[in-house]
Length: 239
Image (cartoon, rainbow, N blue to C red; front, side, top):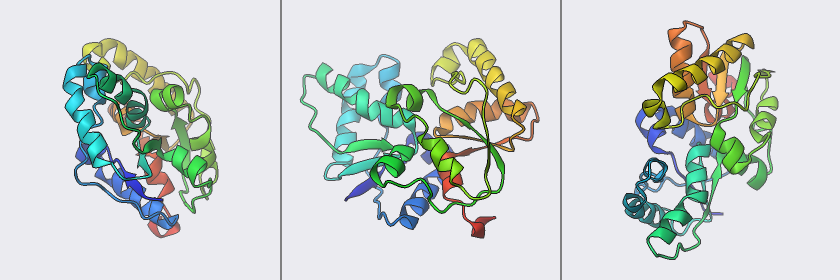
């Protein structure tokens, strides 16, 4: 199986350790994944803000970068959702057939559904709570796969997050265009996180963690945020 990793723009720019964690984790599980250097944006920001015509060359570049792979793994439900549900819309608008390229999997989907594992050999001795991001929950339907992976991590104490399925308020440009509403939604999420007594908030999208983490930091809550990949890649040697 020929596997490629879509690291995503936000991880490349702001959270490079998450991309590295994905490769460490996959290597530990026997997957020799590639990083196609030609990869750029998945086109989601353009599609979400209505710039479908401008998204056409970006989707073409995505298809070229990942041509020839059996599947693509990404540490983002948001970007996986865009590739699986928005690229076809862009191609139809351009009047072009979208060749069936490799399926794009969010990380937890790939681990559980493709590799068939939940125990990835991780060790993370901390109290953790998990926020299911909107695209992973609603667009991809990953269900409890991330929770199953977290429950198998040695040393991890998993606390249930109240109102977990409520949006954190980030929503990409929504947070910019509707800042007050976004902040209020994020404040609700941060309050629920603090109520769990968790040391670490985990999610599958660093974009959401950027938003919630900013609020938690300004509140001096002492709660840090980490991507699911960073937790699953952790071992006793890292402790």
